[in-house]
Image 1: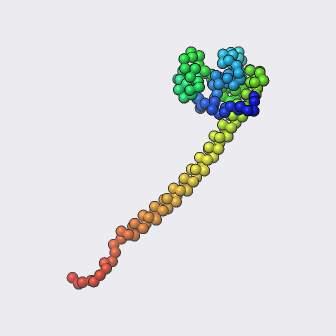
Image 2: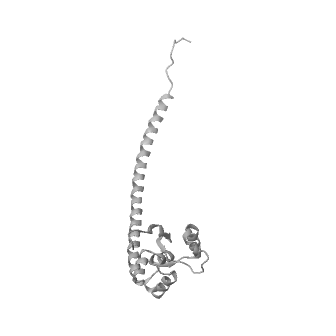
Length: 168
């Protein structure tokens, strides 16, 4: 892989069935092999790809993918359903596709998954910090509103009349 052009692998990661996955067409492009050849190698070594490593998208999932990602529009009229590979499945692909390109691309993809996890972790920490700050602000506003309400109550108490008092 050249150092001049580094693809943004994070944009190739999708979420299906609660898992972060990469689609076979994208992996084939990265590994510089035809998608058909990639799928053949996977099917020849299917015992290496359990359900948590690789699964085939349903027609509904494929349509959702094509709708949300313009670069995969060629899948729209394909009768073959795309394969989705989890991080472990992508790693297993490097043992099935034994080219130097596959090894280098696999290293880059593994790093992308690691960066993706780090971003998600950072977002969770940021979310917790924001919630803590929000709770502190809510307490401060409640305190201020209680003080304002107390002032309103003292304002509404009856006053002693001012002026000359006359006998009845």
